[in-house]
Length: 178
Image: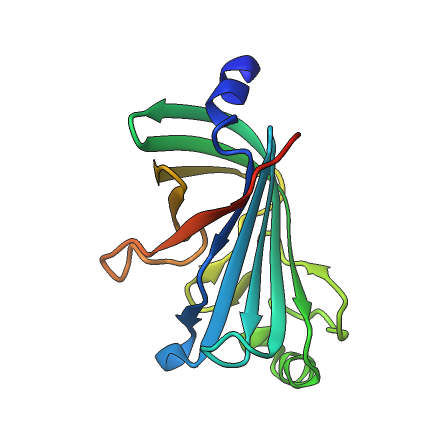
């Protein structure tokens, strides 16, 4: 099974980048997502910025996972990931202050946040509609690939209630030798 997964992921190995995506209330923030796939290792980093122009870094969200299974049918990819961890790192003093002053709404519980210090949020609900998977969880993802473009649904947003499935489009940034 692992050999089949490795063959199926060979074309996915490398680094993939999204454009600057507007997010947050009324699109007031920007996020760039970098996805690195190296055989069965997945490292996804979402860098959130203060403005939709992706200029001032404010929060890094990192998901690390192990690729458990991949099935390919044409341009469709079905993958199962085993979550190793999900961390948040506040990178701006205003974020630290806001999260520490309003822990229930913004900071994933009762953690004390420190500037540029990553903390695990695996299994936590950080804002309404944003629940991170716990460590060890199996996350099933259906993606599509077209040449050097990869489209993956947002794995954490509760978009089913809104009646749609949001997705991120990535473009290949670099190949991996792993």
